[in-house]
Length: 123
Image (tube, rainbow, N blue to C red):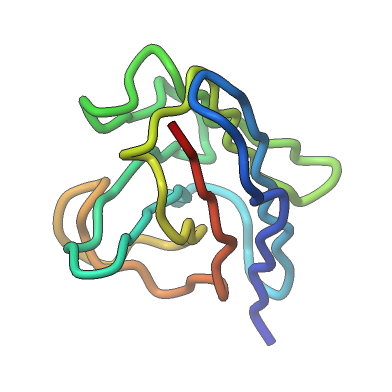
């Protein structure tokens, strides 16, 4: 059974940092896309960052470039999202996703996603 479990969310003030983790199990890790998307109440889903597990440069939404960093630890079956210089507009539920089925890398359809972790940034 495939599982993706996010952790690391919380409440911070603007300018602060958080590191999200996504622990995954139950599927073949290699040579597919994994990433993060977020959704705030009343807003559309926004792809935040993604990586190809076989290597290559990561992908970022323009809104987070230079502030967020996606990474993976193969030995721990875990993906991370380091978020620095957080802004109130980063407030959202953050979900990890895995195995892109179709569409763009950041906004396409993914086969698996987790339950989400809440990030709240106050001004």
